[in-house]
Length: 424
Image (cartoon, rainbow, N blue to C red; front, side):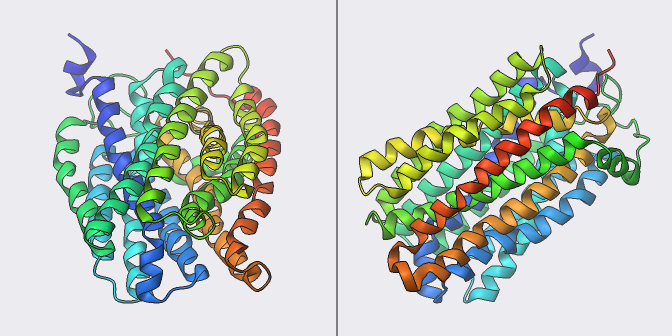
């Protein structure tokens, strides 16, 4: 009898496909705010600093902190149910963003989106860890991470289209309701496997304590270097993703539809190539030396900096597209290697909790700080550079990728020592 029949679970590829679909909606609901920033600011009278709070702090506060207890619950109960419930909550609050009448209304709705999305990613990492062996896990996590460019591109394109045809409020409602429709399908397809890393009944209870996982990771140099390296890159990555639509409209004079197509193509093509490339390289090179799980992202960041700078600085739209396309791919390379490496710092029953602690650092600093920091810096530079202040804010932020490259490089030797081999 096959493992799938014993556990009642579906094939790993089908499970991965459903996880990817949910993750796409995760980023649709995040990225749609960026493409709708201009009409929201115009109608609600918000400045760049306030918009930065909506895109970063409002979402990241509860998204980052609640992710840890929700992942702990998922490790002890049902990962699939936690993901399903999270999808329902964040989709409802996304739809409620369309009813906002002022800053605090939409701020609270974005808090709700963060609450829902807090329970989605870390348990999904753990489900993938349960279904795919170590030597294929980085690529599987890269396929899952395709939800970032695919969801971001879909959010930009759908948001721009609906906002142009109807208004920005309708765009929030449409994507929120769409997420609600796939929640029952996800739970029907994705079943829980044993959390011991092998085949067994889904009801097998893990013997795990949150404090033990936290204490274990606190002693691992690789965990801290990977977490703060990812957080540094995410500050710039999330900041660029959120503010690039505004830059294209202010400095390149593109309208909403043109901005949607420009950014959607960059995210879709560049992001997809980068995510898959990172996973393939890490799985291949990492067999010989675990340090490559840190080296691969580090090299990508270094190459991305001058290309991003050229795209931000140029005034040519076609040249900007080409210059943004390549570094956008390089910016996503880290996802497969780093998320896989974090999975290998603990035993299988602790995977969701370890991933959540990693995401706590990454998102609280990267998502919470990056979008607001670029917006606040743009506001501070406005008296000197006027409408071009956002361009200079982004250029200054590129130093974060160099810091991330240094931290990821230093993580390599620690990964050799602290890697947890799986029992067969």
